[in-house]
Length: 451
Figure 1 (cartoon, rainbow, N blue to C red):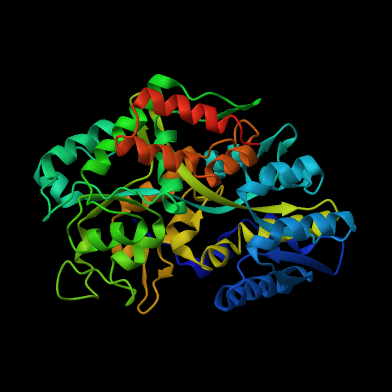
Figure 2 (cartoon, rainbow, N blue to C red):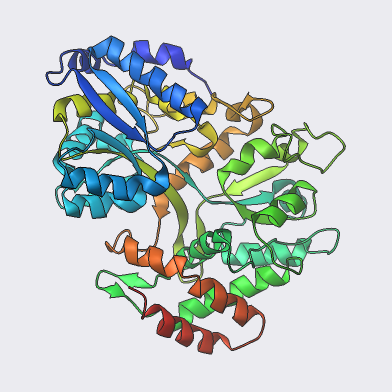
């Protein structure tokens, strides 16, 4: 893959775009709320904002907001007529804030059209789609991944674990405990990790507990397929209450063929974090395990051959109280000249939802792959992983999904997930408490009472 120098990218952007940014009329200062409040990340955002100011003359006040406080602070600021101009926010707020009047969808849609809607990952766009266009502008995101031993798959003539069927075939070939577990599935009911993994597996088979009207009974046949698959991967796992810790430790020790994890494992996998080193050999800084690893983002069950990727997407929202032109200019800059700096805040968890521009459709993906990741040591993802793996990481954003997003029921779906009803009943099914049919019926009964 030919890599472009990120510094040189700014000079190559269209002159018209630069001219537009330097002639914005409006406020001398805009306020920007960000949930990236860790000191190092905050400093990077302030540096990017300073570059924007140098180019446009518009000052940016970067204001850190704790993510758990974002909803209540935005509601209070809206009531007081004192919203900031731009808010960096999670997916869960996009549609509710639009419906409440907090977000200006016309302004966000104009930004997307100016930058080129076809340059954004389609899945990230669809999650914020409203009648007028888009509630907010996608900025970055990450997709949950099946992490697997590509070397063992190749040695055994196995297809990558892109489907339920392929996963089960790999378990049949590779499961040999205690030396090698076919999978390490999440079984600890009160861990959010199990909730995320299960939603991914349900989405893969096209099963959701909501439709546009609210609760929707789970399809019995498709849900039974989910339950039977999950029981199979649990049976290929060690005994005990398993969550992210055991799955990472066993994979890092070379004792797991497959796990489900977030991309935040990628730097650790390559020996860049002393607190979580690979132990497959005697060198905790070794990249050997990374070189033997493959990933899958889009995963499919038998009732949903197109599959799905579970994703966490972040957005820039232009608020109802904004100086609109100045806010739009800041967002456009952050997704063009300043986009590499935006992604550099935390590259391992900020995949580019805008892969390129009109000049080069992969410019930002290429620049992102050369950004350093790691804690105790740093290296670019593009030096650690093959080009096709980088493409798979970013490509997951095109098919990104979450329960309730398309139906406008994200809040209800989130309440269902947070209740841990699904975790508990899946675990009881696996433990033999009741049949698959009885489990589906009980899920429907309990989920129907959640508001």
